[in-house]
Length: 357
Length: 216
Image 1 (cartoon, chains in turn yellow, green):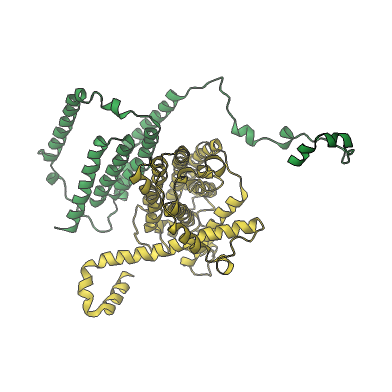
Image 2 (spheres, chains in turn yellow, brown):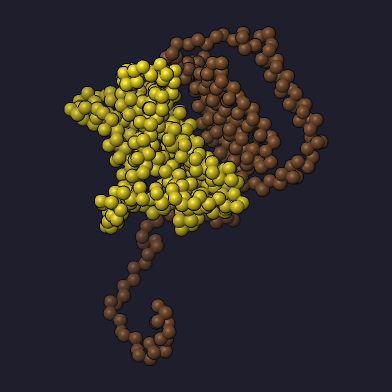
């Protein structure tokens, strides 16, 4: 694809091309970044609108419907309001860290998209350590919360940050363990290879591709990964981090204006990222569910949307978990289940019945 | 100057600066965050050496897990920095000696006859070379016993740490989530049969407490 763009730019610039040539790798990288992040940021902006609408309909309400047709301009109104609000820095706050906090929260959620494959060959960095990169970058997100919680110099913020840190560190482990099983059956750390591996098998040959995706043979791990993903993004029912009834808004209680908005953007960007990860690891990425329809990026988008809908559905349906129950679920239920399933799948792979040859 | 060299010097300067700030920062939390930056710079340097697996693992293990717990503990401790600096000068000779020893060791390794960087085999690998695969192949074939041994030792350390700090108290009251989850309706709710129609309260009792009714 790079060659086509190169040709296009050469013909477009004509005589000026030699000026651009030395910085072409930079231009190309920025083009790729923009073409990935612009849709992501647009989705992040409209996800809260979608969420409010979905939850409203589940509550038999209408939801936002005042700004623009069917309330479609509501995200823009919200963004403008937050942009023009003053960012207040508490007197006793650690100023540099206070500003760094929200940035550290949002940056990893965007950086991780570098290794997400959207279609065969349609990936910015097709690295062999893709899964590791994803895990490493997503583990950095916790710094945004812990730094902002501490730098605010407020007890509520600090308590929220402590809760968030403990929760995210715990669920990262079960997520990583669930991924180990995926790696075992895929025999690769490369995300494109993991998706390609799900397109092979008995059912895929019969034209029923969706039955040979990882979600079916690894069903418990699929559940573990999905639920851990909800916990990892601090969403309901695991949203004790910002539990309104207990600690107001947790680590973001002292933030206002755009700094506050960054936390929101980070939360929704992480939700989309986790949905993309679930789609790639367990739901066959861009693969078509049935043989007679072509594969393509629209399948990935559809799968991401379904998982995102699940996130919203959970929020509308379940009451908040108690903190000790969250910890129990992570450490005493998911982790042993993952260990058990590693042994089960490992044994299965060594028997003649193995379906991953 | 080649671009790569420029990047190396920027990263190396960042690493040195953050490492220096770790020991000079007044606030312990700032010191820990500078240590995080130091790890990150080191990982970037490894990335520059095309050791992407080690770099990512360094970020995942140290930056993503170890330092978060470190930060967690340091933030909760009430550290009196003045008291920590109190005997700085009396500890200085010992600290300087340890530092000197480390410098000598590194000089030996880097400039010695056998270990010098030039003596190492060159690593001009093909573009599709995957050092993860090579590492895995070595770990699970040639070094499989030391690898398994290391994991068992880590497991023993883990269990030992838990057992050392585990202190079962008989008198503490705690919730048992398993029992709570298993609770049935009949354990909590008692159905009582009551008449649906009750007599109207007499006029006297309603007249004596009018304020209370208004308050509702």
